[in-house]
Image 1 (cartoon, rainbow, N blue to C red):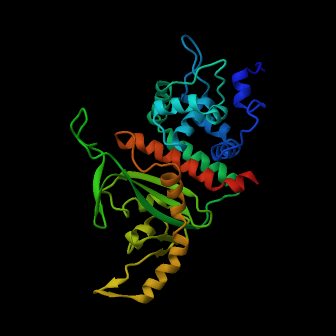
Image 2 (spheres, rainbow, N blue to C red; image 1 turned 180 degrees about the horizontal axis):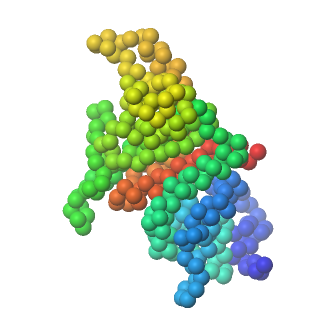
Image 3 (cartoon, rainbow, N blue to C red; image 1 turned 30 degrees about the vertical axis):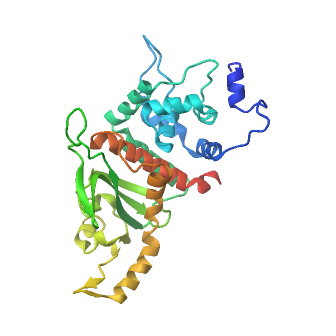
Length: 320
C-alpha cells in the first residue's frame, strides 16, 4: 500500500479542515460509491480497454469509468470534467486521484475513453448489465410496462464548420412549439419504476413506431399517454397477452367524454412513474441538450445515463 501524501490526506479530510462539513455533493458521491456495481461494469469494458505494454501505460479502467460517470452526473464537457477534478476535493476523492503523486487524466484521455464506448456500442451493454444486477438484487421486471418518449434538443444553428445542422437530428412539433433534436423512448416497469428498455431516434419519429422494441413480451398491461392510443395491433405483435391501458383521446366530435377522462386519470396514476426516470436524467443531471453530433454518440450517453438513473432510483433498495 502506497504511503499517503499530504494532498491525499487533505482530500480525505484527515483533520486539516476542522470546520468543514459534508455537502450535498459529498453525500451524493458517497451514495453512488456504495451502490454502483463497479466490478460488473468494468468487466463489460475490460476486453476492449488498452492493455499495458510499450509506451505510456493506460489509466486504470475503474478510474476512467468513475471520471466518465462524474461527467454524466454534473453534465460536463471533457475539458470541463478535468477542470472540475482539479478544483473539487470531493470529486478527486471519488475518482481516487492524489495530486501529490499523479496528474488528473486530461480531457483528451476522457475523450478517447468515451469514443471507445461509442465504437463498441458499450452503452447498451452497460445499461443491460445494470438491469441484470438490479434483478439479482430482487428488483425483477414485472408484467406491467409504461412507455413514453422525451425530446432532447440539439443546436439548430448553422454557424459551424459544415454550415449545416446535424443531419441525423430532425425537427418535430409538440403542441404549438417546434423542437429540433432527438428522442429517447423508454419502457419502464410499472412496479419498480425502473427502465428496462430504450430506443434512441430522431425527433421526427412518432412515439408509436419503437413501441414493440420497448416491450419485453411478457406484459399483462401496457401503459402510455395518448400518443400510443389505438395501437393494440403493435402491442399484440410483441406482447400478445397484454391489455391496452394507454390513455385514450377524450375529445370526440368536439365534445369531451368525461367517462374516458376519468379512466385516463386512473391510468395516469401508474403512468406517471415513467416521468421519474426522465426527471433524474433531464432535471437532476441536466441532460436536456445533446453535446455531440450524430445519433450514435448521443445514444451511448443516453443508455449510460438511463443505467445510472436506475441505480439512483433504486438506491434505497441497494443500500438496505
